[in-house]
Amino acid sequence: MSDIKYILGHFADPDDLMHGIDKLQEGNVSIYDVFTPMPIHGIEDKLGIKRSRLPIVAFCFGALGTVLAFSMMYYMLVQDWPMNIGGKPAFAFPDFIPVMFEVTVLLCAFGMVGTYFFVNHLFPGRAPRVMDLRATNDRFVVAIDAEANPYPDKIDNILKEAGAIEIKHNERKFLSYE
Amino acid sequence: MGNQNHNHNFTEQFAFTGKPKTWSLIAIVIGILAILFGFFTDHAERTFANLLLMAYYFTSVCAAGAFFLALQFVAQAGWSAGLLRIPQAFARVLPIAAITLIIVCTAGLLTHNLYHHWTEEGLTDPNSQNYDALIAGKSGYLNIPFFLTRLVIFLASYSIFALMLTRYSENEDMEGGLTSYNKSIKWSVIFLIVFGFTTPIWSFDVIMSLEAHWFSTMFGWYNFAAMWVSGLCAITLTVILLKKSGNLSWINENHLHDLGKFIFAFSIFWTYVWFAQFILIWYANIPEETVYFYKRFEPEYLPWFWVNIAINFVAPILILMTRDSKRQMNTLMFVCIMLLVGHWLDYYMMIMPGTVAENRGFGLIEIGITIGFVGVFTFVMLNSLSKRSLVPVHHPFLDESLHHQI
Image 1 (cartoon, chains in turn blue, cyan):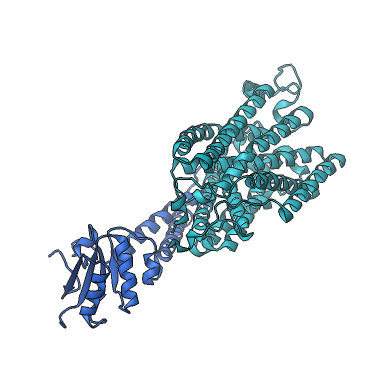
Image 2 (image 1 turned 135 degrees about the vertical axis):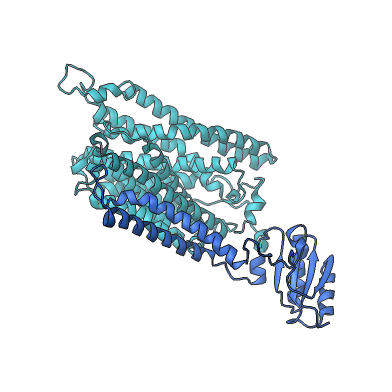
C-alpha cells in the first residue's frame, strides 16, 4: 500500500470531472492536479490555482527588447558610427521606433515561449513529464497525492461514486517515453 | 461558473426618465445657447469648425455602433450577445447623426468658408487671381455637387444597413428562429465591405479636404481607428453606466474585460496608424506633405499635439495593460471618458489648424457645443434604447454570452 504514490481518477467528460472534484473536496481530499485534453472554464477557481505569472514575464521580456533595441541603435548610429542619412540628425528618434517596436514584440514572444518550456520542463530530447497519457487524448484525469491523503480505499470510493470510469494507483509520478 | 446567471429579467426595459432625461435636455439647451453665442459674438467660422467636429464625432460614434454590430455577426461572436442592444441603439441613431452632419457640411459649404480651400471663387479659373493649379487639378473630384452626392450616398447607405441590422434583431425578438440571424450575417458582410471601402473616402472628404493641398493615404485608416476606439469607448461607457443604474444584470466583468481588450488593442492600432502617417512624412520631408505637421508644430498647437499622443496612447496602454484594470468597472469607466475626451482632442487637431488656424480657441463655444452634442446623443440613443427590451432574447448565442468566462 505504501508503494502507491498517486491515485488517478479517469472521467469520461468534463461535467463528470467537475462533479468528481466537488465530491473529493467535500470529502476533504486534497487534489494534486487535474489533467484535461482541453481547457475547462472555471476549473482554476474551483481548484484554487493561482493566476499565471506569464504576463509579468511577457512585460519584462518586452521591456528588455525595447531597451536592447534602443541601446543597440544608439550605440551603432549615434555613438560608434554616425552617418548622414537623408540629412537627418544622427539621433533620429522617430526612425528608432519601428525597430524598437519589432524587437519588443520579438523578445516578448520568444521570452514567453522560452519561459513556458522552462517551467514545464519541455526541452528537445528530454522525456516530457506526463502523469497519464490518455489525459492528452480522451480522458479527464484527477491526480491525488496518495502520501498526503491516506486511506486510498476511501478515495477510490469517492471517485467511483462520482462516476470515474477508471482508477489507477501509480507507483511512480511520471510516465515517460523511454 | 454562471450559476448566478439564471434569474435575469429579460423583458426588462430601460426606462428613460428622471435624471438622464433632464440632464440631456439641459445639455441640448446649453449646446443651442453656445451655437447662438458663437454666431452672435462674431465667431461664426470657429462655431462652424466646432459644429463640424462634433457632427463628425457624433456620426462616427454611431457608425462605429453599426460596425460593432456587423462585426459581431460576421465573426459569429457569442460573448457580446447580451450587450448587442447598446450598439443597436447607436445604429438606430445613425440616420439622425448623418442628417446632422450633412446639414452642417452643406451649411458650411454654402453659407460659410468651412471648405474655403477648395470652394473659393476662381480657384479653378486660369485667368483668375485666385487660380490654384493644384486645386484645379483636383476639381474633378473636389467640387460641391460631387462632394455632397458622395456624402449623402455614403451616409445614407450606412444608415440603411444600420437600420436593417436592427430591424432583423427586432424580428428575431418576435419570431425567434435562425432566419433573422442568417440574414444579419449576410447583410453584415456586405455592409463591412461597403463600409471598409468608403469610410476612408468619407474622412478624406469631410476632414482631409479642409486642407485641400495636402493628402495622405493613411488618413482614412487613421480616422477609422479614431472612430472605432471612440465608438468602443462610448459603447463601454454606456454599458457601465447602465449597469451602475441597476440594469444589465447579466453583463459581468468578463464582458467588460473583452470590451477593455478591444479598447486597449485599438488604442495601440490608432497610434500605429498615426505614427505610420507621421514617420513617412517626417522621413520623406517633402514640403507638400510636411505642411500638415508644420502647422501642428506651431507653438499654438504643439503642446496639444503631444497631449494627444499622451492621452490616446500612453495613458490607455499603461492603465489598461493589466487584467485587473480591464475588469474593474471604475478604472474602465475612467479610461473610456479619458479616451472620449482624447479623441475629441484628436479631431480638434485634425480640424482646427486647417480651418481657424491661429484664431482657434478653447472656451464657451467648444465646451458648449460638445456638451450640446453629448446631450443630443444621450437623448436620442437612450430614447431608442428604451423602446425595446435590453437583451435580444432569441439571439442564438445568448446563452453563450450569459456564461461567458475568460
